[in-house]
Image 1 (tube, rainbow, N blue to C red):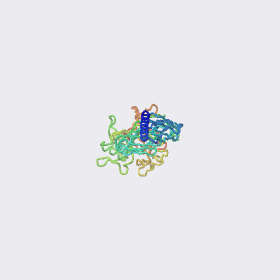
Image 2 (image 1 turned 30 degrees about the vertical axis):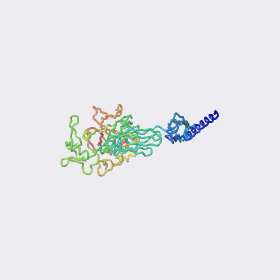
Image 3 (image 1 turned 180 degrees about the horizontal axis):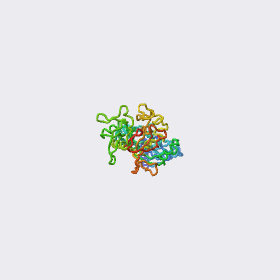
Image 4 (image 1 turned 60 degrees about the vertical axis):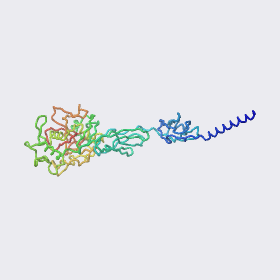
Length: 455
């Protein structure tokens, strides 16, 4: 009887064992999966990969630990990049025996993302190009408001166009490093005929012997010492104010006279209290008009009082001497030309040797020319060298000793003379340099000076 009982117990244990084996053979494990199968890591950086499916018991291994090492914490894999190259990270599920590979590319350290400018002001429909100066070479761009400004990427150049008045942020993203830079864009509706000049710091004045003309050493002393000046943003008229523009002002003003600091002044050259016939403006049918064919010539025979009154009527003012020179030199786009826009004076300037004009001759067949016929400077401003001297807000000083450095007008109530800049149609070329400066009396009106305005 005892023998039969033992045999029965052995039988039962065998059945239990075989049943357990059968259950283990039927156990199904989830497929081994990771959230990333291919990664790119910068040398010195750590990338995290997560095992998202499996038995929860794993091992990891790097195919080349000189390039990347790997550690495991639960289901989190951390891959540390040591040296450039290709590495395979193998993940093994110790329960199911499944394996998964992660292809890791180790790249050199990516330079910090940098752009040339982070704050710009645009006119409507104006486009600027901003360079991505540092980064991986692979970028994306986006606009926070494409109704205001849009951005297009061409290699390392971000082209931004102003669409509508307002503001937007242009985001530049480095695809490899994930770094971002924002460019603040302000779009302004600028009056036609004006150029925006972004503020900045520049060296004002003339280096010794610029132009190579020893005769001009007396004039050079008036352009010295060179000094740094910082100016704020402003708008400047693209062209010298024309006869047509000034005639409209005279009509609105009701005549050629006005007052300045409580005294009566003439705005133009007068003869016996009436407008001199030399002017290229005439009074007809109750209004002032530019003479036929003279509409787009620069306004001449204008006094400083007249220029100042026009500027105020137009919602602006005369430029300070520092603003004038900064704009003439091309502002923050300057290429350090000697003349405004070029070192080839004939491309940008009317001067004694090229100003012949049988339609508008004042002396020896020479005279002023219609504005905007020469090439513009770096900012798109015309005729800042030559054609006519341009009147400024400042009082005259014989040199720059103790001149302001903030771009403001340098006023001396004891000095009657005022500053004019840029040269004119009847001077030698060295007098048309961007650094050249001279003086005039505020009540004088001649055929060699005119003006432009700023806002």
